[in-house]
Image 1 (spheres, rainbow, N blue to C red):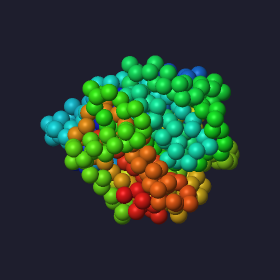
Image 2 (cartoon, rainbow, N blue to C red; image 1 turned 60 degrees about the vertical axis):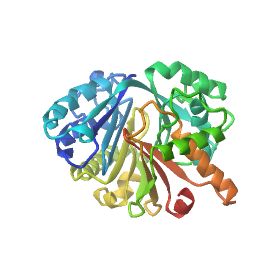
Image 3 (cartoon, helix red, strand yellow; image 1 turned 45 degrees about the vertical axis):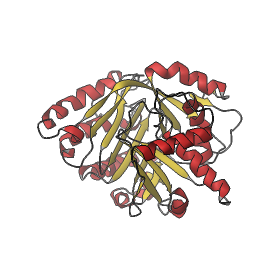
Length: 360
């Protein structure tokens, strides 16, 4: 399936111009499934909106709204809004569509702590000089790959021992196959494509932070923004319709006022996955609609990657290696629990509130 990374805007201004098509994208009430590019569920006309798309990610922050969706829908739903907003939104405040088409690959890295899992999945691709977006949801890991690089990614994963498992419809590493810990979402970015790829992960980390420093990209910590990772409940089949209606109402309420932070991922096979600010929980009947620990907070460390080209590679792997290294050097009793959210213009490292000092 071909996808585009679609940036709606990078400021709160004009969000209202995109709100209606955004809601139509998430809740395609009357859209025939066969119109949804790449969907294998076209034979199920009554399928829930939660599982209509092969893959959909909507991430809204205080600075941008970044969307990954089927290419045809990006053009159909957002082009009119982009034209309407154009006279008022120019430069970094306008909508930008990635020139690249992407394919989505599901990858499992079970049996590993969050930091090590990110390294396991991203290091072979970063060392091969491949530019990707890496999104970890509550249930699964997804790699967004430029269509032209798909064969390279498959080869890099297979060289590291990953195999495609038909049953799971994902690339799996047989060497690590235990219980999975939840995490959230992730991104990929630095080292110039004109430079030979680094030989080791340590060299990649050095290059990553040297590039961030050279481009004056300084991590910004918002200690007052508490995030919660959660997913839609599906533990009681008799309540599916009620729960999904509650989820739809909660998401709509949250989006109407443009949240400071909300990331939603929908796929064909999993329940909806969310990473959202604590203050939005009041819009949901949490105990009946969502699955997660609302007392466990995470804090975002935000990297403004706008100065870097979209095809830059290695940030997730470089940052993960730095945090994993700090865990080992500082002798922590457990691995730092970290997640990532990759959007069109920022990379967000997300750590437990108790690990914030180590994350910095």
